[in-house]
Image 1 (cartoon, rainbow, N blue to C red):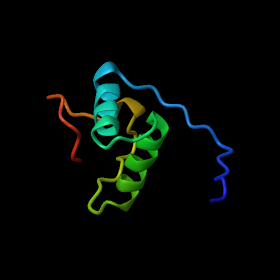
Image 2 (tube, rainbow, N blue to C red; image 1 turned 30 degrees about the vertical axis):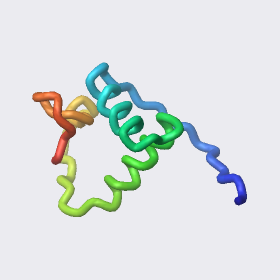
Image 3 (cartoon, rainbow, N blue to C red; image 1 turned 120 degrees about the vertical axis):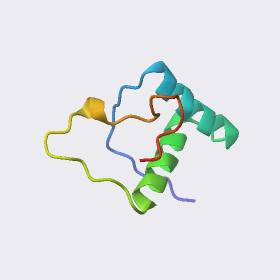
Image 4 (cartoon, one colour; image 1 turned 180 degrees about the horizontal axis):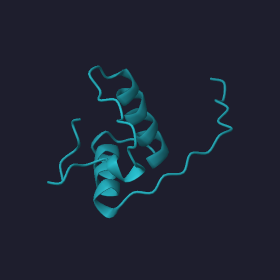
Length: 75
């Protein structure tokens, strides 16, 4: 199988709860790395229907991985 070329690095900051949500996703699915879990989450998110578009003036802090109750965001 040919190697995938991944020449770009994407850096994000997560709080402890968000990181725990990503790690839970990863371990429940026996994924080999955080990067593979994040790529899978991105793939699923990009394929999802009914996502909310960002409003004008939205800030990075307005977007999270989990909601205020500690559940995975379903927005």
